[in-house]
Length: 450
Image 1 (cartoon, one colour):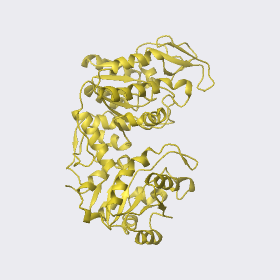
Image 2: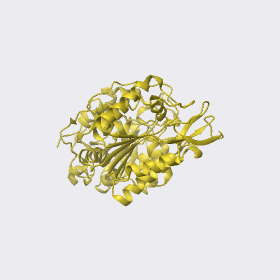
Image 3: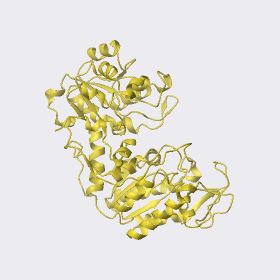
Image 4: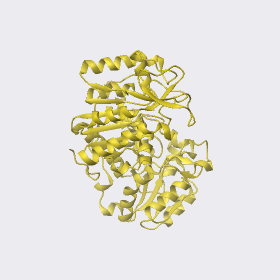
């Protein structure tokens, strides 16, 4: 089993199928299609290599002590009003910030939150600054802006070890447009740049790529290094048997990864709303369950390819069905081939969970992306929490490498209380998709070479 050391040099050789897989989930329910989606043409898996990049561990103490360091974190966390509902991304940024503090740097964190149309209070980073302060055990001052004289004055007045958080970078449209005049103002108060936001590394924005033209050195933080190194290590050198768990609502958004993972993994479990497109492809009645009719033939092709390659795809054998999409719906468990008209599948049944446990029992590496059911509703959550328990037990008892990716999967692990037992919880997003398509990650490519 590969050994992870986030402070070793980053060998930025990416295995694209796994990275895309971890990005493919959205925060929409596994059984509810998003209002619209773009279907991407499958791209043949290929390895994309970058020269090794510098990380903060490559910098000498003198490079950091007393220096004004701008750190791009990803604190784009879900909010209920002003309450953070999942602080995973903030917690993941702490090691880099604490390291810089201990080295005597003056740390200024920047990030976006949501998609504001100009300054909007509901998209303020105030809650993120408060939570980061709690985690660090000391004050994190929120700047009133991300550029300007007030920001410069705050940074100039800060002492070694202080932490400041800039206000939402996307309050300015120039952030996403990466306009040079804005970037110059943005970078002006600082001496060097650290990118620790894997989830936005695929964006050539002012705060991810533009600043590297004005700040040197520009290096990676520990989280960015860990994401890249861990994912590459697990998939490139992970022990077999290797399995992938693909959940979520849409075959259309997962077809590329399914094709790629069939080549890489020994076993695949399919769950979530996309199950019913596969069941229909096998000629079964699915009632009013979510089905993408345009992808039934695609599902048939995936099943045929698995047979040709001698790979096993496990579909549910029993389904928890309901007469409507509601917490108050009537529900019952039926065999996967016995879904009646007028009923919809919303979760895996108990026999399926038992079969999944047996199916994965010998696996040494498992990647999960997407829930098995509508876990937000208690009566339809057992399939998702069941697979989470299986993976946590595999990690704890068998030493398996388990990687969890995608917003819903991470949320389910957190809610189950077993997230800490997984090998790796990814914070990644669309960056992985860009790699799958053979594109350079601007936020990574712009960093200093070793």
